[in-house]
Length: 149
Ligand SMILES: [Cu+2]
Image (cartoon, helix red, strand yellow):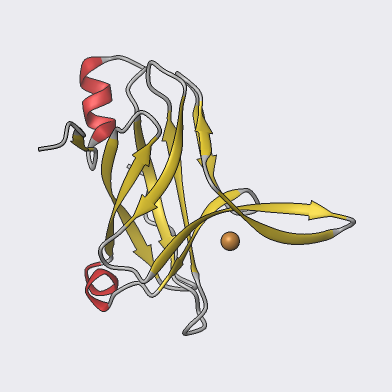
């Protein structure tokens, strides 16, 4: 058996509220915006909340996609482009947003099952070997954002 701890963080915000601490490594507000064009990659966004230690998000995986990459949008000479990045620093106690125009996930081949249930399960892998499983809300193009609870 490996020593990797798996934390199910689907309701991490509830957990956080109930224990009243701000230094738990977790992620929330995860969303996958499906590409309106079949074959084009979809984009993933979320809030990454730092724990007690400075760590890096080194990979995001899912059993129900063909490929997932971490990207950063960069602007140079008025032109916007994207670079693939190897990791995303998540400083202790800080919140790092994956959002349009910034760092984001690029996702190819989201499975029909996840699209139909409107949830994509993904695993965040950190540099300290923590693994956090989250469910991202899958949104079709043009669909309104789900109400914030
Ligand atoms: Cu991208």
